[in-house]
Image (cartoon, rainbow, N blue to C red; front, side, top):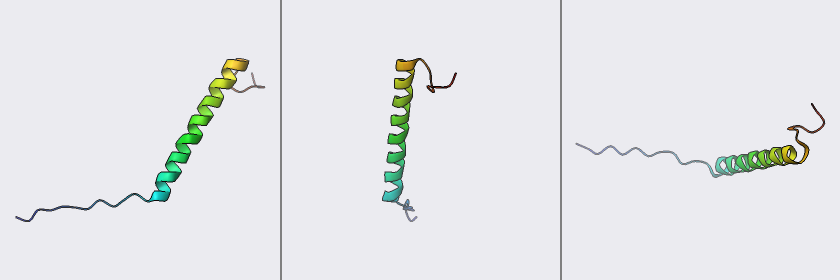
Length: 48
């Protein structure tokens, strides 16, 4: 029997960078939301 080894395609470096940048932006957004809530008591300052 032959051993069947399948090669998995590599992930493009641009997509990895984009996903990391997206995660960083989401983290900054969550921190901004928490900061706004702690300082003003509102999730979106200016709205009820």
